[in-house]
Image (spheres, rainbow, N blue to C red):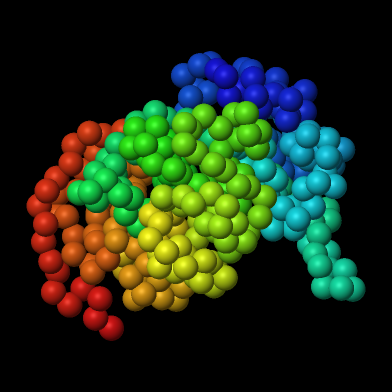
Length: 319
C-alpha cells in the first residue's frame, strides 16, 4: 500500500518491521499504532487492540520521535507543545509526557512517554452520504458542520468532501489545515484541482490569510471548538464563503452542552449539522434551525442512500 511506503521512513526499523508484518487486508483496517515506554506496542484494527512483540524503552521512544519529525524535532516544538507531531501523508502522532513551562510562560513537551499514531486512509467516496447537503440549489457551498466522537471517520469524510467540492463541484476550496492531517505536508501531494492548503498555523490566522489572499468559495477546517475559533468562523460566514468543518460532539444534544458550539449554533454560523457515527455512517442531519431529515439515519462509509423525510421536532432546543 502506498501509504505504508510513505510512513516507513517516519518509524524506527523495529516499528516499520511490525507494520510490514501486516497483510494487505489487515493494513487496510489499521487505525492506530500506540507506543508506550515499558509496554508492548499496540495496533488498533477496527477498534480492537492487538499487542505486538516489541516493548518500547526510552532510547527507542527518542528514536521514534526523531523519525516522526523527519529528524527535525526543533521544527515541531510548537505542535509538540500542543500534543502532536504532523506526519507526511496526513497521519498524526499524538504525544503525551511532561509539559515544561519556561519563565516567559511558553511551554514545550519534555519527556515523552506515549505516542498514538493515527493512520490516515484515503477513502474515495467517503463523503457520499453527506454530499447532497454540501451545496445549495444554486450550486454554492453551504456552511456545514460534521459532528461525531473521536475515531468515527470525520477527518476521512472531511478530506473526501473537500476534494469533491474542488474536483467535481468546481469550487475554489481553501483548507485551514492547522494540524496538517487533512492533507500531506508536502504541497506536491495535494491533489485537488481547485484546492489551496494553508497548514501550520491557528485557524484564526489561517482564515484571515485565506480570505484575503485566495478569495475562496468554501473554507474547510477540522476540529473546531475553541473560543478563539468563533470570530474567524463568524467572519467567514458573514463574508459569504461556504464552510465545511468538524467538531467533537456526539449528536446535537451534546453540541448544545458545549458553550462554544452552542454559541455558533445560536449565531446561525452553519446551515447544516451532520451527525456521523462509526465508520462515517450518517446518523442524523439538521439545518441551522434544528429541523431534521428523519430518514437520514442510514448507511455506511461511502453509502449512496439518502432520505428526504423532513420533520420538525417541537421544543428541540428548549432549556
